[in-house]
Image (cartoon, rainbow, N blue to C red):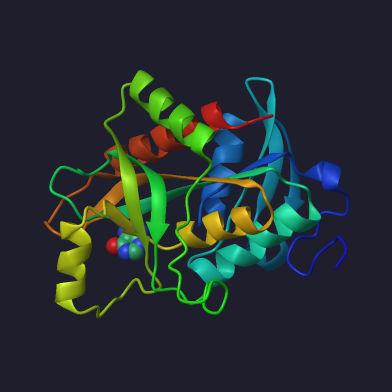
Length: 239
Ligand code: HPA
């Protein structure tokens, strides 16, 4: 395949930076470009999946939506790594807490992801291949998050294939018991795509809801926690 791809209309690799921040929501990509980046150019609007490139404190970075779920997101992860020579994709997203001490608006940084996704079927025989982010960036992100004063958790996340899940409660209880911090829907695909192309992935989340307790949120606090997460991702982005 050549560029432009069926899903990204940039006609030159130079239109996209080496690091791409990817929220699920394309309007959140626009929010990052509008509020954090300078000298912004738009490189994609195919299927409404807005993508922009600009500068954060002099560092050239791109931001683009991924859509929701592994199948949508992996189209973009694979095309960016494979056809646009992107080196690092940082997923910035929301997640539902699965642990009592992981509170609303806390920052979670994924040290690995597990999933019921079938993308690995037949790739590794009967071996459960584990997927992980880039280790150096993981350490950098955890250190930076603590330095910025954010309540930070680093551990395993569940990349679920269903938002409206009817998972057996015993499965949920085991995920919780075995220490899964939170549930989201894309990181497993990102870490696999990064491994496939010998590139780097990282997943940073803000807790937007809880699967174990009723939590009330204010729009103001939600916005602030998104902003913290985006700033953290921009700080660890590589030029
Ligand atoms: N499930 C899956 N993905 C999510 C959730 C959830 O509860 N909250 C935020 N992203």
